Structure formats: C-alpha cells, structure tokens
Length: 98
Ligand SMILES: [Zn+2]
Image 1 (cartoon, protein in one colour):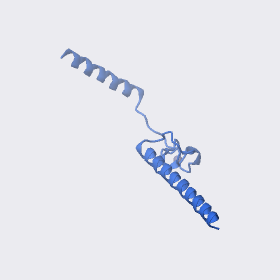
Image 2 (image 1 turned 60 degrees about the vertical axis):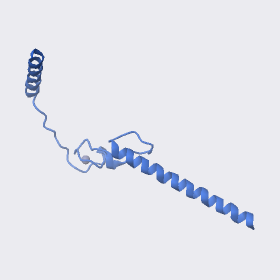
Image 3 (image 1 turned 90 degrees about the horizontal axis):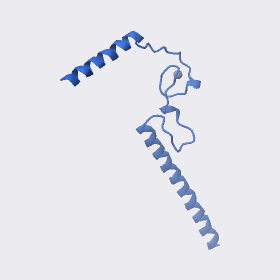
Image 4 (image 1 turned 180 degrees about the vertical axis):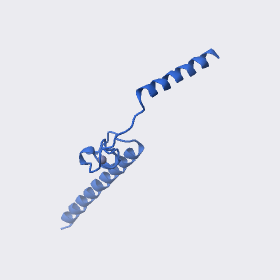
C-alpha cells in the first residue's frame, strides 16, 4: 500500500500549498489596504475596517451599516471662501511683480 500513502502525502502537500498561497494573498491585501484607503484589491470584498462611513464620518463601517447619527459638516461660507481665494490671487500677483 505504499502507492496509496504516497498519493495521500502528495494531496496533503497540495492542500498545505494552497493554504500558504491564500495566506500570502491575505497578507498582500492587508499591506495594500494599509498603504492607501479604499484601493481596488484582490479581495472580493473591501474590508469594512478601511472604509469611512458617509453618514457619521467614522471609519470602520459602511454607510448602510451605520448605527450612528448623521453629522453635519459645517463648511465655510461661500463669501469667506471667495475672500480667501481673492487673497490668494493677490498674493500670487504680488509675488509675480517682485
Ligand atoms: Zn456611520
């Protein structure tokens, strides 16, 4: 029965190889996730740890899975923004004249 046991051994090796390859792929995925947010990855599903909820702006869950309250982001008023832009333009012109 030497042949049988050899075959079983080989199948075992294949299984181990597949497990190792899957582990390597997982590690590569983790590294990619760490390097940048919401990157397209070989994972079929992007992990929720790396997404930002659009509702409560907290990291770690999807918007549809949100249990928090909606946060309203207070944006600078339009006039304030325009003044800032004008100041920047003035600054640029001054630098060009120098
Ligand atoms: Zn949320």
